[in-house]
Length: 297
Ligand code: GDD
Image (tube, protein in one colour):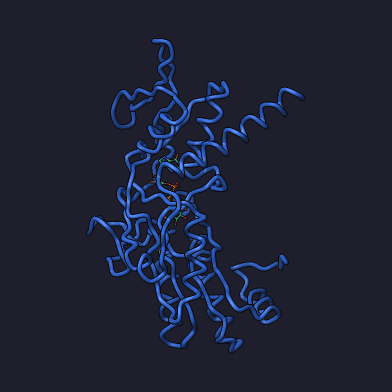
């Protein structure tokens, strides 16, 4: 049942929690776009950071200490490449207003666990993608673009930092772990990741290969472009646009999910290739449906 509430409105949270008296709360609410957080930092801090505190305060105030609380945090907590694989004890150096807001949520969750005995856990999730991913996040932007291209679109894809490396997993695998985190005997924090890392450019190249699109990169930096090679002709397909660069970006993320492997029996069903394949298959279907709709108008 959908109840109306708002992470910026303490009163609404207290009322809903008091009415429902849930066994478990999963706080997945956020302004979750890292790039957007540079344009809307105060709103991001309000929702992504303080929103979590408001829920924890409601649990404490209502003395509903039996509620288990899951806080979705993020690999954006890390930033500096201090290690090759980040785990639960790695140094935290966020590089965006979003990352700082998640850092607050992460620490406040731990503080409420240790101070008030609330079963509160933080899941430090690395990038998790799926066909349901929002269209302004890079993986979906790419798979939707390529699916439309296969069906004849001549649009050009504009991207920012294609050398950023991320540890990409599938949201389905990760959501199961969110639930598992709350089924443990003791509350704790966990890194959820695949342990592998690939750049945005590798994501594009892999997706093109799956679709039999022959791609050729030329140029460097802001002038780098990708062409599609078709019957010895080249057609521009991707270019770099400074609009999509962030004032500050994390260039390298790779998680170490050892603790989750051991304690949560985490065994991801999707690897990088299967993830891309699932997204492409879905977006091809969607693009076909859309094309039929337009043709029938
Ligand atoms: N969105 C976007 N759009 N990103 C681009 C683009 C573009 O056109 N071009 C390059 N990138 C680069 C970004 O600069 C970043 O380095 C990388 O691609 C991934 O960007 P996003 O897909 O926006 O995801 P994110 O890594 O910033 O954040 C996601 O993952 C986090 C977990 O690690 C979000 O889901 C966060 O909410 C989440 O916490």
